[in-house]
Amino acid sequence: MRQGETERLIKHVEQLIDFGKAIPLQESSDEFVDLQRFAHWRGLCRQLIFSLGRHAAPWRRELSQDDSHVTARNIKLGTLEAIRDTLNMGWLTGVEDLVRADTFADLLEQADYLLSEGYHVAAGVLGRAVLEDHLRHSCAREGCMPSVPRPTLDAFKAELYKARHIDKLAMKNVEAMAAIGNSAAHSQAVDKSDVERLLREVRGFLAQKPRD
Image (cartoon, rainbow, N blue to C red; front, side):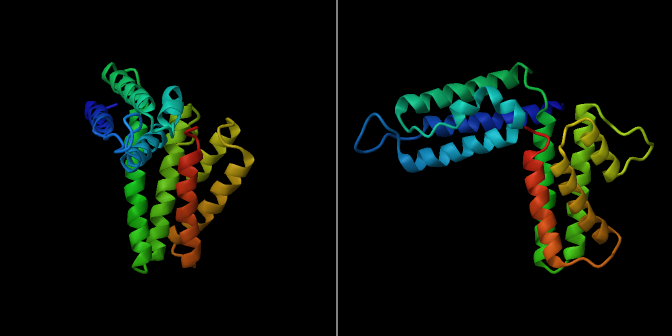
């Protein structure tokens, strides 16, 4: 984990803390904070949960609370401060996953743009590249890298399934996504609707496997 990555995440959490502290009280009550500002902050906190993936487990319940009471707001603030302090002490591992997630999001946005401009084959190639890199990283993290010299997407998928890090349904889903991506990568006939489905399902797969 590079120092800059940790510092970037700490800065993000500190911004959430400052945002929460700045939420004003409701005009009609001194016990509840402004609902619109609170809803905005709550959404940002939930996005942090999604980004942290499995590392958010100790704080998920507190950050997910919908209660806009001042006490509940303060509990969220304390939780964010605990996350910041955990990062400062170097106790949160896997922050590189957050950077990787940002990279994947950027690549998929590029794929969406290519798709909108009529370059659906190129968009499919990008979608396949994101899927393969995610599988490669998952194998490395779970300690089940293929033993072959130049492993393919299929090899990564097979090792994850053999090690029970993905189930049969997820494996079949990967195969379906890979089939579309392979057609695009090899300049074979591929429909725009297929590429749209590929990008949609890649996003869903990244959100679910194997981060939970």
